[in-house]
Image 1 (cartoon, rainbow, N blue to C red):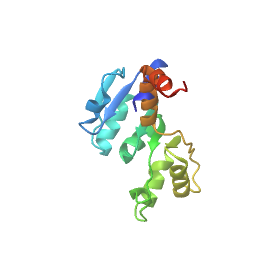
Image 2: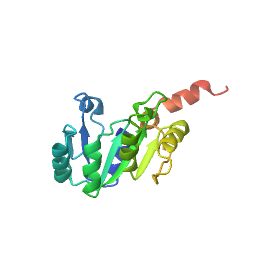
Image 3: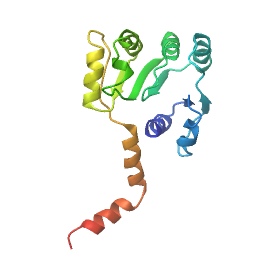
Image 4: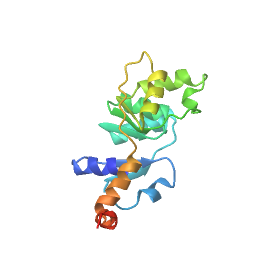
Length: 167
């Protein structure tokens, strides 16, 4: 999420980063400027409603596969725009299990944008959400954006070019 967080911050946005995993903040590193770093509360109706009330988000972004029904519901109810980025949908995903499809269709239908990491993933979301007006746009994977950012910030690009150029 780092490249996206950096761009949002550079645009002057107040940035709250939340994690459900205790290892999330460790992986964030110190190269992202934010206003608040917190843990996402358990996905109970009461906790999610209180979190939405306290945060008052204009935009609520979920990454990868963290589709928490109550958080999605209460952020939507509070008026936040919802974005699902780095959206994965693997062939054996619980998203596609027959007993989970109605639930997953409902949760995913709440998003203003679903941004899968590839065209194949996009096709899977389109198939699951057939008949539901949800915007799906392939935007890639921000992990790859991080690699590009690191190359730009280092001198290795010129080293590589010099090393492999014809003499």
